[in-house]
Amino acid sequence: MTTHESDAHESRTDESTGNTAGAGKEFVHEHTPRLAWSQHAPEVFKAMVRLDAAARRGLDPVTYELVKIRASQINRCALCLDMHSKDALAAGESVERIIQLAAWEESKHYYTEREIAAIELTDAITVLTDGFVPDDVYERAAKLYDEKELSQLIAAITTINAWNRFGVSTRQAPGHYKAGDFK
Image 1: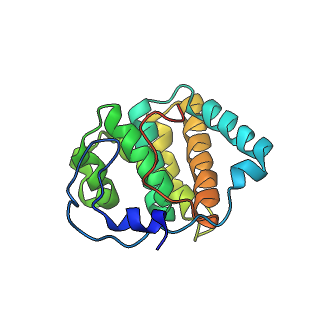
Image 2 (image 1 turned 120 degrees about the vertical axis):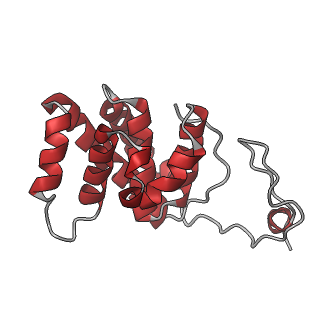
C-alpha cells in the first residue's frame, strides 16, 4: 500500500472546516486523476480562468456560487462541488441552502425569486435534452434580470458547464481545495 493509499484509509479531516466527522472510519482510497489537463494545456486553462472572471462580473456572488454548485450537481463534478461549496460557505452561505439546492423544486422557500430563476435557468442550460432552453424558463429569468445581467448569468452557467466537463472527463479528485484558492 502506498503512502497515498494508506493516508486515505485513516480518518479524514476536512481541511477547510476542521470537521472530523469521519474520525475512526476507513475510507476507500482516492482515485488518481486521469490527466493534469491544466498543465498540458496551460493556455486553455488561462483562457478559462479569464472567461470565468469575465462571466462573474456584475452578478450577485451568492447567486453565482449557487449556479456553480447546481450545475456541478447535475454534471456530477465532484471537484467543482467541493470547490464551490467551500467558497459559498466561506462567503457566508448556509449549509442548509447548499444541501437543499439538490432538491430546489421542493425547497423554493429557501431562495429568492431571482435565485430560483437563475437555478431554473441553470438546469435548463445544463441539461439540453429538449435541444433548447424552454421559453417559460427563459421568460421568467428575463423578467427578473435585465439584459446585461441575463447575459452575464448565461455566460456564468455556460462557463461552469465547461469547467465541469474538464473536471469530469479527467476525473479530478475533490477534497484538496481550500476556500478562496482560485479567487
